[in-house]
Amino acid sequence: MIVDSLGRQFSNLRLSLTAACNYACTYCVPDGKRLQAADAELEADEMIKITRLLMAAGGINKLRITGGEPLLSPKFDEVLPAVMKLGLSDVSVTSNGQLIPRKANLILDSGLKRINISLDTLDADKFRSIARSGDLATVLKGIDLLQAGGLKIKVNMVPMRGKNEDQILPLLEYCLDRDIELRFIELMNMGHLQHSALHTTQLFAMQDILDLIATRYEFVRADAPIDSTAARFHIPQRGHFGVIANESEPFCRTCTRLRVSSNGLLYGCLSNAKSYNLREVLHLPEALALAKVQQVLNSALRDKQTVSFRGEVTVMKFIGG
Ligand code: SAM
Image (cartoon, rainbow, N blue to C red):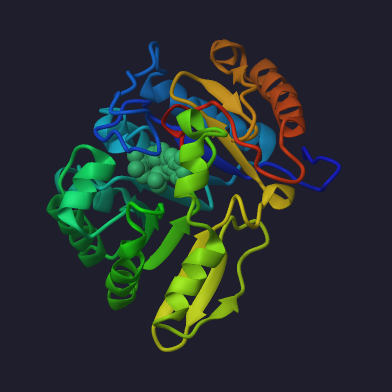
């Protein structure tokens, strides 16, 4: 077991299938520029092998498939059904939802139980001004399709002052009506936002969110798993919502997350650009590969921040959001 001095270990892997995305969200990429996909992405079978090695060498038992936009990658069709058979205790996907209507059958057939869909607004114009692409109605249709197929859905929203904070209550109402847990993600200090004036002016922090929700609902703090990144709240008779308060209530001390980018780089911390290339272990004999992965995990665990999320120049769509 690989454990650090704070008792932290890796158990959750976020595997990025591709750095490419069909959106260009304002908080993710700078000024309308679509960042190109990284060269030399791993093949689907290499991603599956890396997942298996991390399970065997490091005790990884939960996996989230992410990106970029994972459904954009042809690898999704191979990786999802394969990782569902690896014996992980939990598999989930994070998607912007734009391609769900096309992939719904594959997702439902794979046996996936839950999915997080990013949605920052219910207003079609605001949608296009934040995502700078895509279509709101398609995302809503995707949510309906997967819910009808029995998937548990969470919606992720990034509230930004002056952009979409007026969407907090409509989105909450939409989610409560559908038994969907809404997760507000505080704007993170990453990529082009790192230490920028834009981050400071647009950050709509947990207390701002709670104050706004309190104008319409009564709620209480609810229990959350110890390694959860979200502070959870319960609105009696209606449901739950959460806030991922990386700025206001950092969760670094209990973080169990590990990331592998689509080009095979392993990151122990979202707030640290240090990475380890896993490509070289792919062709080693099994025992050597496992030993090497253990060594990498030991180093990566030391890269984790201890107290707070400092921010990093890395961009979520590359490191795997
Ligand atoms: N394309 C998928 C999606 O949209 O869910 C997966 C990748 S995306 C990078 C994962 C999550 O990161 C999304 O919920 C997105 O809103 C969030 N994200 C990206 N940059 C962020 C930032 N600077 N602050 C907060 N959340 C961010």
